[in-house]
Every structure is written in structure tokens, then in C-alpha cells.
Figure 1 (spheres, rainbow over the protein chains, first blue to last red):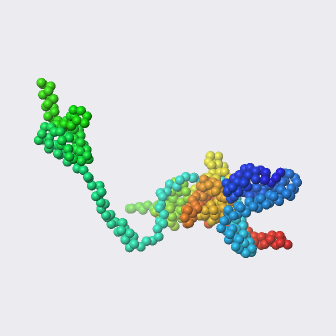
Figure 2 (figure 1 turned 90 degrees about the horizontal axis):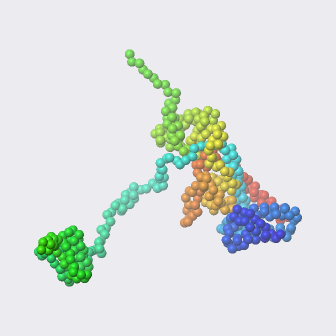
Length: 250
Length: 200
């Protein structure tokens, strides 16, 4: 069986070796995710099961797996690979030995933790969120009081008054028309709205209409209109009631 | 004739010891001498004496609960003789075994933390993402800021729970790194030997 068809069952990949290489070359799989030791083990087990040494397969495997290893190493140490390349052979060996020693120490530390976990297996204690009030960490370095004072003074200066010039009213307020219509009705029993607002701008006419509606809502006036778009006649509310009463009694 | 009553106390810190005892019962995480001193508004040295009294009272063989120095403070735990009964009713924080990858990652964070996932991957030679996620989920490690560069990787450190699970007074109770594993000199010699054997 060609090496490329070797079936793999890794944490990050499951399938033939050939597919794994394709995915890696297409950069659809991160080389650092691949456990190369597991691939070597799978190959060795496969060879052991066949009970014969296939030199050709071994050679192909070595070429492929070493290329994979290089790819992974480059991915893991992109900058350091270049640094190592610049080193003299002895320095490179020194650096490599240093890194291996670092890893071996951590492996030993992990073994110590495992042993410790075993010996501390019978520890039971209460767990839960700490009921302590959170204490803010003092993270600021000591500050110069004069500088702090200056900073506070700068912040305490009242902000400049914001100009509301752009928000000036460009039409008279409703209250102005309210007063005007009330004054008119105090002198006359009724008036024609269209005549009163003739010559005013459209906005002013709209405001006058709003004032009219306000007065109607307050029950101070009565409105009548013979037909849509016909002149609006405004009369005092009491005068209308008097007219109605007269009409009924007649 | 006036009679004088004299109260004889067994120990001058007995009352303080009772207060400290109460604080430790309420706490769900180890309390330091400073925290106990602040809460009791008493002198740290007297608090230490009170702790000494309590440790004597709550020790293996004398009590079902044991007062221990752990994770930078003092906390109660169940005595070892009651562990079997506890195990029938409660689950331990690290009930399911930690994988080799998780233990290596935990060791790296404990010794070199705060450190990032790329730091861990650099030492172990394989990605540490799943091991880190599993340790964070178990509450043994936690985030501890980011590396200083813009967009720097998240860094991790061990939690007080880690020290409690492993029964450590503090991280300083871990064995010295220099005492673990082969030294770089020995490995360099072996590498050179292999190189020479290949050359010959």
C-alpha cells in the first residue's frame, strides 16, 4: 500500500495521509494543529502489521514526514527559524539544546503535577464565588498634587455658552395669534379667518390656524365652514349658543 | 467587704480565634492574614497566633475539618479520613483526569505565567488552544491581560483554585525548575555526540 493511502486518526484530522498533505498545501489546515508524532506512530504500526519491511514506503514516508515537520517548524517559529539559520552550527546546537531543555523541564513539571494530583486526590473543600466586596486595584503611580490641581481646574472651567442663534424662531408663536383672536372677538362677535390672515406667509397662516384650533379646543370659539375650502367663520362660543337658542325658540 | 472577681482566660486570643474561625467558615476562598486582620480590626501578629490555635484544633485526626495554609491564605477543607464519604456525595474540581497536553500547558502557565498561547506553543511544539480552553473551563487558569504589542495575544496565569487543587501554599511551593529535567549542557553534549556519530 502506498504511504499516501495511510489512514490517519488524529485530533485535528481523520483520513488518508495524501488528503492531509493536500489540505496543508492548500493552507486549509494549520500545520501546528497536526501531531506529527502520531503520524509516525501510525506508520510504524502499519509497517509492523504488515510484517515485512517496505524500504520504498519507508523512504517515501521519511521524505513526506520531514517536509511536513519543516512546514510545521516554520509555522511555529517564523522569526526564530530565520534567526537559527543565521547562527553558526555550534550556536544553533546550543540554542536547540536550550529549547529542548526548556521543554523537558516543563514535561518534568507536568509529571510532578500529575503525581501531586494523585497524592492530593482526597482533598475536598468548599467552592463558590468569593463573597468579598471587590476591591479596586490602585493602578495609578503617585501623582504630583499641583498637576492634579491644574487638571481639575482645567476641567472645572465653565464651558462657553452654546449659541442658539441657529434655532431662532422664524415665525410668531401661537400665543401671539391666541391674543390677537381673543382681542378681535372681544370687539366683534364673529370674523372671517381667511380675511384676517390674508397677506401673511404660509407658515404664519399655519400658526394662526393652530391658534384657532387651540381656542376651539378650549371652548372659547365656534367654527363654521359652508363647504370644504370655503372661508372659515369664527365666532364667540357664547354668541353661537345665543343664535342657536334664538333659532330654536323661533 | 468587696469581693474581687477574676476571670481567667485560657488564652488571650481565644475570642479573636473564634472570630477568625467564623470568618473562615463564611469564606469560600482562602483568607490571608491581612484580610483577617482587616476584618477583625486586630493586630496581624495576634491573628497569626489565633490561626496557630485554630490549626492545632482543626488538624488531621482531631477534627473532621482541617485548617490549612493554601493559595496564599488559610482555608478549611475536609479531613482526609472523611474523603471517601465526601467522594460519594461531592465531585472534586478536577474529577476527570487532565490530559498530558493539559498538564504540560498548566506547568508552563504555572512557571512562566502570565504567558500567551503562542508562548506555550513555542515551548511544546504544538498548538495549545484546546488545552488552554479546557484549563480555563476547569477554572485552573484565567486570563491575565494581553501582551503589550497592539493586538497582543491574551496572557494566562494560574488561579487560586489551581493552588487549592494541588495543595500548594503558593506558586513558590512548586519545585524549582532547575531541579527538573536535564540541563542544557547535558543535552548539547548528546546532540554533539549524535552529530559526530553521523559524521564518522
